[in-house]
Length: 173
Image 1 (tube, rainbow, N blue to C red):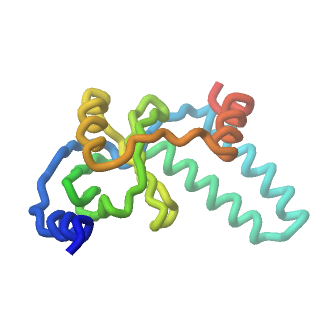
Image 2 (cartoon, rainbow, N blue to C red; image 1 turned 90 degrees about the horizontal axis):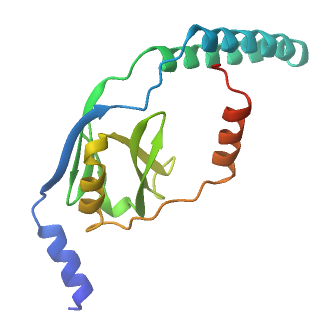
């Protein structure tokens, strides 16, 4: 029996051990003011009129569904859940993701929240993002480096475009 097969057998026989656990919000959240929501509603009205003229009523329904989604996501604070990382799995509110499905991880920040990001090429949409507490950032990184590759992903075209748009077309003044 070769050593790789032996190591795989040994790792599958190993008991699952918790490496790190914390409680944090489900998603990053930034409270928005009335200026933001007014701008979103005005954009919704404008896009609805244009869409109705060009395509008909289904575009209007789509636009207002997106406006409603934006309203809910930016007005309702997320609930707090428990995250756990073990030597075999990532557990988010009881749902398990195998570490063998993760190709790499990195840490980033969005709206003042620290995020732990896992790249999972075998799952859709390919990324798993978790909010972490700022004091746990380095400890989580050190712990995970024993099991996964730490490699930050350079911003792609979509990330660069979103950053540029958010700077140029700020909905919150």
